[in-house]
Amino acid sequence: MGEAKRRKEALGDKYGQEDTILPWLPITKTQADQFVKITTKGAWIGIGLLVAVWLTVRVIGPGFGWWELN
Image (cartoon, rainbow, N blue to C red):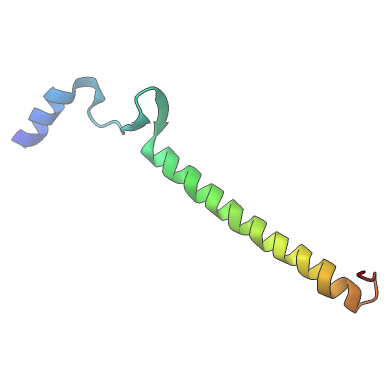
């Protein structure tokens, strides 16, 4: 309990608040982590869509006779 009081007195108003990535950028580390998770998931979705389109253009479309590749 003594350590917590000392830390609270040392930090003052910033006690219990998250650290920011950079002092001039008001983004917390938790927000940055959420951003990375969302963009990573979006990238994998994009890769999956790219593969699906590629398979459709190269395999499925010509296989069903929808078009011919030159």
